[in-house]
Length: 99
Length: 130
Image (cartoon, rainbow over all chains, first blue to last red; front, side, top):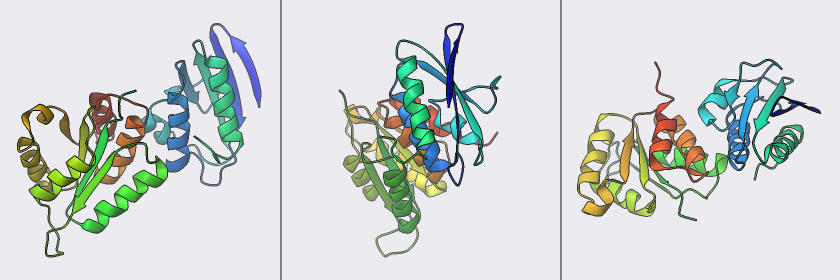
């Protein structure tokens, strides 16, 4: 897990070890959590994108990120830091608790 | 906070409808009002306007209700059920042009965040193959 800020966007990344990858249930949990924050949050599978809206269930699920992918987040907004921390914790914790 | 948009699942098969509702409950949670119906009263395949109206009542939310349907009659009977609703409710119920199972999960995920009926419908319909 690492975090760094560049321009106005905060960034974070986390290795996903969940057995099935970013499939249906993990995607739903991730999207629901992202939607709990006001910040704009993007998700990508490489540090340079391409980026998708982490609050869009359809786009998140369509990334089909497999096990052992590194998930990259970037966020912009008043609660960006808290959002990234929560999302990294969710992925790092194997999606155990998305509520 | 106003109530989340409700989701109604209408399938020709009671098993498909029930199974889809279970997927929504287990994947998304119970914070989205949910109704479902499927099959004809004799236990065969089919849909009924009365059952759809009951399902809409069950899932009713002041924010509106999004209906996911499987094939032909499910859609026409859903539209008929909407027409038979009290006038003040009719404008707050939409049939989504989306696959029933996937659409229900996606729509419910969107609805769980307190999204508007239009946003819920858009999310479900984003799935429609191009």
